[in-house]
Image 1 (cartoon, rainbow, N blue to C red):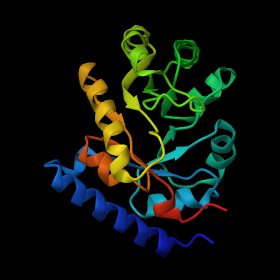
Image 2: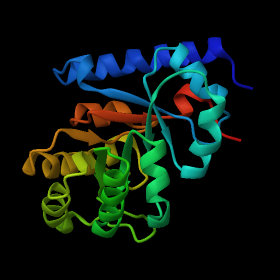
Image 3: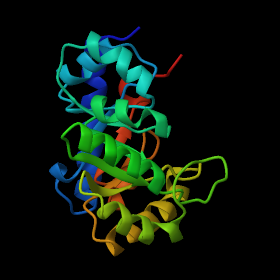
Image 4: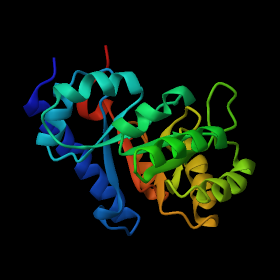
Length: 223
């Protein structure tokens, strides 16, 4: 069962690790956004996270955010971090401040039309399949240049950076993938780099991540 005191203690531990990783990398703590991943947890998890100092939360599915948001009392910046079906683009624009999992031009164009209709400029990240894994969504590294140019030409979208979930491995094994993604981000002079989760966010920060997505280390194991 979720407990506010436990969430506060866990957030404090994660914050300490983020600060230490930033120090090792010669970076400022303010350079890194902590996104608390509340997927599969009840709405109260969002309220607890915000009470613990979190400003950004991440959800994997449009439906889950749609059900959860009316039950939350705290204000947060909502990120969609899971795969988005194009037929849910309009709902995603309505529910999320940022869509961090854009993986194709077709999806970007649908989001742009929805954002234009809503009178909104939608923040997005381009998801990159950095490990070229068949079971994962995301643009291949060689597709990034064309997609950055094309998405950058959609006025209703604000392409802020890149996101990736690297192949499963130890924190040190993922370091090479983090380095490759950072090189891609730097090549295209983008601002944000969303990489690193509960098991490897310290390594990701050392390699330049500006946004880490942490669920288990804050809320505990999912049922």
